[in-house]
Amino acid sequence: MDDRYAAARRAMVNTIRRYGVQDKRVLNALLSVPRHLFVPKHLQHCAYADHPLPIGHGQTISQPYIVALMTELLLLRGNERVLEIGTGSAYQAAVLSLLCKEVYTIEFVKQLCEEAKERLKRLGYRNVHVRCGDGYFGWKEAAPFDAVIITCGTPRIPHPIIEQTKEGGRIVAPVGDPPDDLVLTRFTKTKRGLKKETFGGVLFVPMRGKVERRSSNHNR
Ligand code: SAH
Image (cartoon, rainbow, N blue to C red; front, side, top):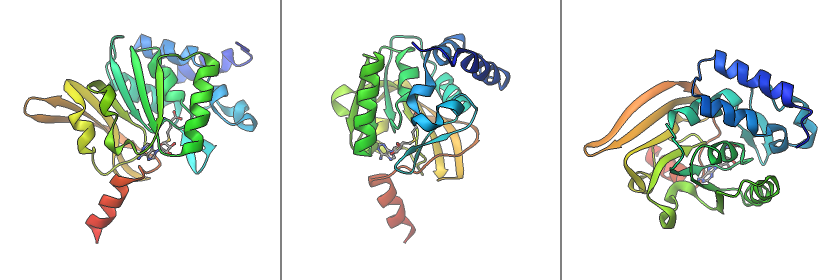
């Protein structure tokens, strides 16, 4: 790999560690994924700064610290099946692929989805499966999942996704009113329903498709 950016990547991971992410496996995954190859060429020089960047189609690659924090909250040990809603650049998916067994990721925007497939193949992330569509419905054929990460803002967790999560499984998502009234939330599925924990305010693009239509109907 062209490692012109190795020092910048180490500095990024040091910042993330200082912000409080401690899981060594997560930090090592971030040290290994070449984030500059997941952003548009003209933005490569700022790929390792701790902020989100535009990836086209009005979408963004998340801030590195948030990627690390959400990944840590999934509590992955290495043997899990993980579902991601919102592939975007596929950076988060690449990070996940180093920490679990299989990643299933769904992207709404067809062109981003095709680019993500091509990029993951080129970079050799073989345990990531990409599908184009509305993540609202989850990925039934690949369920049940040990962990789910939603990387777009949503007023609530779609029902099919809760159904497709194993008991004891985690769902990490920005929940609330996108883009700026969102709280990073972890739900753990138990026999008696979802246990909820919150981790502060975050910024995310809104989830599109069915969840969006349902909430606008709801407001009328
Ligand atoms: N995880 C990404 C960042 C995602 S930005 C990364 O690492 O780069 C959020 C993404 O969610 C956008 O690409 C957007 O198109 C996608 N998205 C929005 N609504 C969606 C839906 N209903 N199903 C699947 N993807 C969705």
